[in-house]
Amino acid sequence: MAKTNGKPYPNLIGGDWKAPSDNVLENHNPADYNEVVGLFPMATLDDTKSAIDSARAAQPAWSKTPAPARGAILDKASQILTSRLDEIATALTREEGKTLAEAKGEVTRARDIFKYYAGEGWRYSGQVIPSSVNDELLYTRREPLGVVSIITPWNFPIAIPAWKIAPALIYGNTVVFKPAEDAPHTALLLVEALVEAGLPAGVINFLTGDGALIGTEMASNPSVNGITFTGSHNTGTKVYQNAIKNMARVQLEMGGKNALVILKDADIDLAVKLAITGGFGLTGQACTATSRIIVEEEIADAFVSALTTAAKNLKVGNGLENGINMGPLVNQDQLQTSQSYMAIAQKEGAKLLLGGEVDGAKGYFAQATIFDHVQPNMRIAQEEIFGPVISIIRANGINDAIEKANAISFGLSASVVTNNLKGAFAFANQVDAGVVKINEPTTGLALNAPFGGFKGSSANTFKEQGGAALDFYTRTKTIYVNHG
Ligand code: ADP
Image (cartoon, rainbow, N blue to C red; front, side):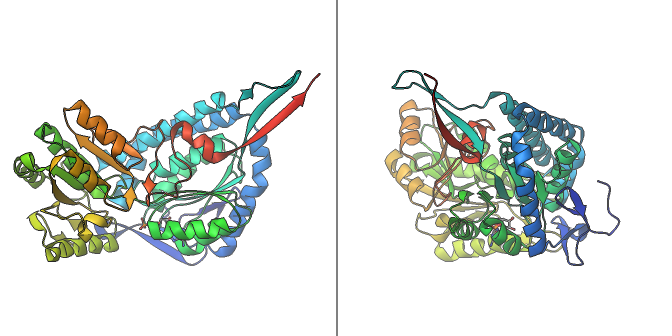
């Protein structure tokens, strides 16, 4: 959609690109907060209800559309994303801050997700079960849930919506989608691609504005059958409490405090590379980001020195410029959060090795920051920061390292760096995290494998992504046919 020349972008309700109300949300560039990226409507409660009603009305026809035909629309959307990759990636960097290379990677991921689920339209099925009586066909059928509310955060403004919207649609659900206040433009470009690909009116509805107002209705409206949410623990808990009143199905992804564990036999260069990618990539604003590094004492000094040297070379700046390794934080709140944890860590007695400063003069920039000699019970080692701040915790032996890795309330992702097969598998089997990596960064996911956390990182209900999405986005009906 072309730039709106100071006029707000629209929402999409029941197939109408709706003229917004007078109230608008100003979306700013976090690398230069004087730049307004766009104005977005503050959808009202009535708008939200009519979006849900539209999704409800469109659902029977959409679910009767043959799944391969639904898939053809997703495939077309994937092609549209390919043709607009540069435009969408630039919009993404401009409103969220990550580097253009990271943004291109994310749009490519969204494109691939739509392609993957387009193919699901030809594949997914129920089961035929052996019958215990003669002349009986016993089988299951996967039916759509109905209307699904999709509430997403700002940190992956196209990949997360893609991995929720694509499976919702392919399995026959209709959608009400609300992106985060800080990244509505990328979301709008995704919805536009779907509409252009031929999605019928009402199948996807798109609302922007006040998360609490719209999100509460999206979670508690009795016409909604499923709610999928990625965001903070506090908000996720509210979503669950609202949804449970209607016994709606819920899927929550709510952050982490992910550990990279480095055993004494590790390749130090590899460990440094993984720490930089997981800790400072995406400015630390990933739920799978490395925020704790647990390293065996024998190699701790050597590792810490190599990591500090490498991190010093990271160039912080506007993600649209060449040669930038780390973009800004997304907003003032995130900048303040990182800043306050930098202060808390020093008060708690952690040793600052690098960084520790923020620069909010023009954009929301924070330095790559490393603390050493962090104790597992310090706040800096327990609470999610969502910024470029790494805590180093020293361990004595693998058992101590695993125990320290598990000593948190989250359980999203964890990685071990080692050349020792025994140590690798001990870690994989004993670490309390839904995603485990060996010699890979805590960040980065395969789009065709299940994703989801343990403990406080999720609602511990359904996984996302790949084939696992079928379980959340469909209900199973069991059918007995006596043909004797
Ligand atoms: P973050 O700290 O990452 O911004 P939030 O949990 O506040 O995380 O936001 C994640 C998503 O939840 C956003 O789309 C936001 O608008 C939405 N949201 C905020 N408040 C509520 C609420 N009370 N109910 C449902 N969704 C909400």
